[in-house]
Length: 285
Image (cartoon, rainbow, N blue to C red):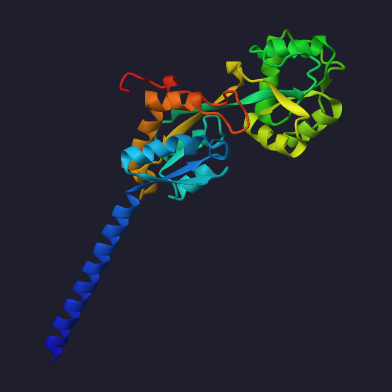
């Protein structure tokens, strides 16, 4: 009886272990059919990623599970993403790559900042394609400009100011300690121009109506490139590398890059998203 018990116990243990292996295999197979993408907010909220990823899902058979937020690299380190998309200049990128958490970034597309101003456009800059000249028009017409102190917008305004010949910052320049929506509120109050991201502004515009409009957007200096980074399976573990690489390759296809250029944000007729795949080495594409 003791021997029979051991034999029965061994059989039960083997059967249970086999079931667990089958379950794990099925789970792994199921997860291999999806790609977990962690992306910063703008490409998701604008609708641009949905616009292009439908084709990827139809062509590849993968489904894409998208997380949108500012903590994309934290999630990737925790093994909750297979691929990340963020601005190339996001402050966590360098440490993420140097720490071995991700493969070398590939530029995929750019969004952009814009010069925004009152509907009356006292400086007459609407539709201009040269941002430094637009800033000079603001100066020369005694119009007002509110400096948005969020780092990316401030850096851009500094570049434009340098390109415009460093005009004296007198009555036209409003340098109060304001960022983003605060800068927008002050610009509305002062009938002034300012710089902000196109996406956040279009959301803000829905709240205030058409008091303020995008004036200048076409100058390439206004663009801010984004990159895709495949998360390292060696460092993090449990990463769908094959699916992530397939998604990255899809984003870099000439057909996809062209479709990015065609995308328009709902409610705005001009281009705000730009293909950036050509900034990578293209010898093997």
